[in-house]
Image (cartoon, rainbow, N blue to C red; front, side, top):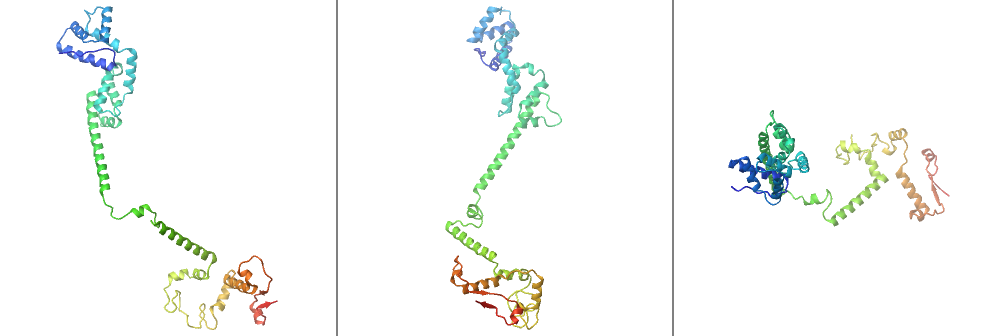
Length: 346
């Protein structure tokens, strides 16, 4: 059986592995203490051979025991500086992206170099639990009886890793199938126009601009009607609720309550004959009780008559005012009954 060779300075883990391998072979061969030292020294090569020669010059190796050889070997390749570095690495070692078996192997190598940090089985289990990933460590420590032996901790960690990987694989296959199903599914209705253009906007630029122009003109006219307070809107304002609440009349076609008085000589307001709605006494009473607002229609007619009397300069919107030619004065009904004229010229 050929013993493994050791060539000299290397990392402590490699030196410790060689020492373990050579000791297994020597134990299998059932050699004495001195024979073990002789066979182990024969496997030393290059720099390791030079080191052994210095040991021979320092002491008598013919009566050296195997334990003395191990002590000399570790003093050379496990020096204090190297051990300090290995202790720091062992204290901060974490599983990370390694599998459980890879992490356990590295953990055991560092633990052999730092026996003072794992003096008992309980301490070794505690450090091993700290080394494992959080998701695996939670499942290992779950239950009423957490592991107290290193072998139990390792077996639980391997099972936890297996089921975690199975769950991840199942989730990945599920989302992959959903993605493929979504990619191959045919849309039930075209959605290009609704997704590419907002609601109410045409995909044709010309059509969209024409529609925008129509909307703008429509908005301008509606704005003018709101600012001008046209008679139609003014008349309909008081009948909004009526148009909604009453059906259309079969006689006049309008919506109003009560009996239709179209075609009769009765007043539309009070229903009595002999006068019209504009001269109805009831209307005059309501006007006396309500706030007085200027009649915009009458004012417009007054300006129109004044424009015709004063000439084309006001009608054309010129800034210069012509010589006044006529004035219109409004008189009360009492003055009209006295026979005075409603228009006075000068």
